[in-house]
Image 1: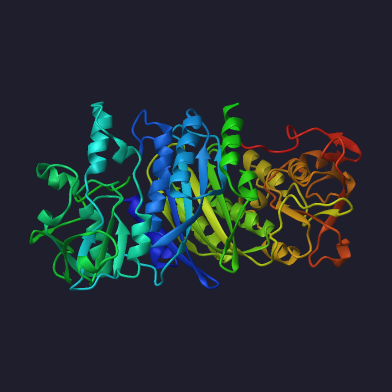
Image 2 (image 1 turned 60 degrees about the vertical axis):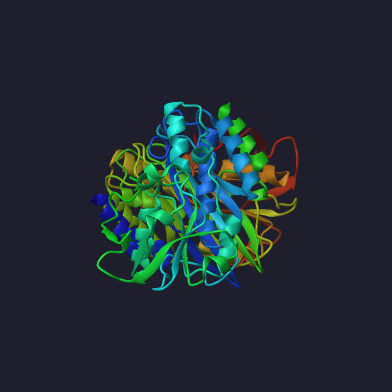
Length: 291
Length: 291
């Protein structure tokens, strides 16, 4: 219970909608004529990483997850600040960091290093510039809107299993996720709500529907997945694919990027989320909730 | 050695002067017509906190240390983002956080909560707006400038000892440090270099002199201290007083805030730091270096 008490307390302290949505969202700040978007993530060894994880993958995911938060705001990344606990594998960590910074075209602006651990922890703040205002939030979905995703789900799940089981199958989708930065910037003027799918399609849809005070009706057959249909239910609950989830009044054909329409927004009913017409209770069992 | 290798690697990756000065500085970012200042600190239980520390003090110091980094840049605080590992004493942590946010007049914009630890770790990013450009750096001190501090040193040392020894003496200066935000903003147009004294006057002077490629000649008798002269040497090596250290061509009487002139900048000699005419080798033994 202490967790919820603390988060409620933080929410009460927080002064922006983004902050009231702790912990997975980005903050939006007006400075002069510009709109700045800020994300802050903390990653803990053993909580967010597999035992024996390659530190270069940890670094990559730390960057990618925050780039994905910027993407969901239609923001262009300006830089990152890193908090790093020094320790074994730092050379590998630096390699993954460099690869991710290069890939996403974002500079390391500053940060802090310290001793401590195990477990080690890392923190990252990403700073971006909004390319469109108002910045998309989770709360703007309107009845009649379509619900869309930018790509298939379940790839990270397959990559995780390949790594865990040592099958030799490709684990890239789990180890080196992408972030949909170009898509987020292109979509921002067209969406009524947008977020990245970091904790599972169903959980994140439940969150967006709740924030928008609406009901999301999702058709599972319409959800693109990276695995066989037999594993559809799992793929819709697995996080870390970092595709974008958004709502828009437009038809898919009118959108500037490829997207799959997976359902429609309805006026708020008894449940925030309907899957194939059946109400889902949540958020337990819908996806991954961090400790 | 791995520490230095890693920090060197980060420095090589870093694209700004601030980032190349990892880990105690702030990053400066131009966005549109505005100049944003960003700080990022990580605090680890047992590394940066005393055993049995009141979590409300941990929260206060996390905020104050980052406000002090903004002060050194002459920046007005706009908000903070917090990374928090959930655990015992979170109610107290939230109380201290709220008190500090109120005191410094800064909103909590967002953040992240997670499980993990012990040891627990916290991360904080502070965002500010530069009130004067060019933003003061550590590297601008010029021969002929005066060297100044904004207040007495050693108060945090006395507070730490009171707390450690349970003497009942006032430990406020250690537990609840201030940050010189008004002074930093007022001084920014007048200084050639500025930083906050977080790791000790001598160590931070050595760093500023090195960054400025100059020699700092400090007269110990001129250094204001919060304790008896018998403990002068310690007071000049103790951190966390968070006074500002700066250089300026002006006389103290012309400065907009009260400050003590403690020495003069000289052309670079054999050592970055002279104390009462004697060269000091550093940085070992000059102050507090974080693990």
